[in-house]
Image 1 (cartoon, rainbow, N blue to C red):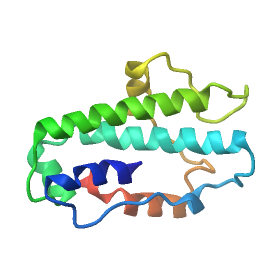
Image 2 (image 1 turned 60 degrees about the vertical axis):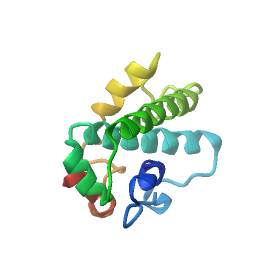
Image 3 (image 1 turned 180 degrees about the horizontal axis):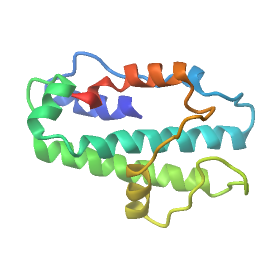
Image 4 (image 1 turned 90 degrees about the horizontal axis):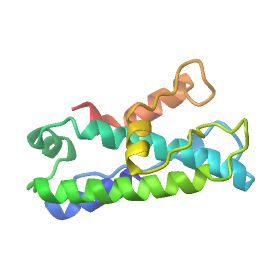
Length: 147
């Protein structure tokens, strides 16, 4: 999903690199619809958290982090609004059939609820979802957020 954000901004001068999601870093086997939904909810929340964090950056800081030549604030806000709508919709779909003990399964009622949930998303250590190796890989993938 981060790829979608960066790709969408490419028309603003083009980033020098894009981010990709690494499914190999998921700590569990994905061999059922329920396990796919668990992984989807976690990835949606993680992307939502990164998107929320990006909203605290100034336009100049975001332009530097994305390494684009030109920057249009209104376009970025339209992209963010579209991303929030898609993330919210996808999350609500993935949460609709949660088992009682499913991970990352907090129910939300609308886009505002999802934004609040994603903004506060954390995986606390120790957790199988955040091993030392996973932290290093995630940190390397999301370096644009640390500008």
